[in-house]
Image (cartoon, rainbow, N blue to C red):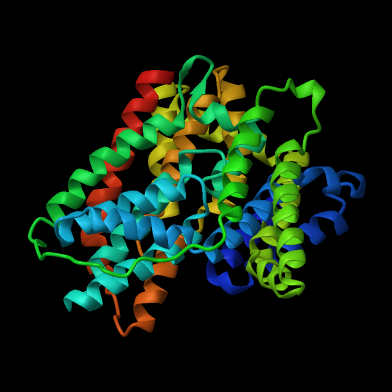
Length: 423
């Protein structure tokens, strides 16, 4: 067990210190697990959760088409037109970003909504920093709300065999969606306090024009088909059903655009927007995790957690939630969640408890915890990159003035609710 554990820890250290090369590190580590015979060659393909990979790839493609249609900008314009001043415009934009992010990748959401905040700031000659930070952390918050809201949610769905509707109601009880929404309401109160002095009037005359509504139909169609697929018994559908739905609708959109424009340009543009780096990273991590599972490392880590908690469920649940918040504040939550999902399942097995409360606690801590710092989530890094292009250098303390109270409020709300519902 020493060799696989050493390989695993080395992989994580390298992922932390060399973030630009994460995919290559994960793939190289996966290759070493196979070369050293830790994971048999015949199990490599089956170690990868292809349903998760296909879902992420297909969703990325559909989101790219949706953004290109300018529909998100139009929706933002409509919302802003209803707002009396800057304070409520910022809060409405952050809430809008959150709603969009429940169904679309967080980074894509920031790229959609941030330009609207920049436009408002330029017209009123005010700093866009607070509003874009609010948009970023709100989009991260809602990533855990639905099956397609974030990569981590898709990973949980694949690991725990959860479908789209399970995030709303699971085994007759309120699912993660409602926990996140109550956390969002509590966190929004923090934003109201932060922006209480921003009472400048706002007037946006130009409205975005949308000429192609088909990508919006595709996005809604994806959600509807994922819901319908959730009613099909597991033994009657392929394990990659959700992935096939997402990739299939993306393919329909690409074929339609290619025929309509009589050009391969839309196809090339959309395929460029897919984050192959993340897909390769996940493939590598799935193999690495398969390797340490095969070697019995995950079982040993699980037993260690149980010993630390004294076999107390509340203590274990608290440890998973708040340790996830801490770790996700400094490292990307994708490799963290990919590693901890099987560990969490094994912990529940050792304790003899239902794993769902620990899974939900893991997702709340890991997804929301990334909001604590500027480097804790890809959406935060993206938002700071947008601000830097506009000439604004954001200090960590300025970011955390908004992010820390927002995040702690949202996590605490979710932490309490999940325990009350699922204990």
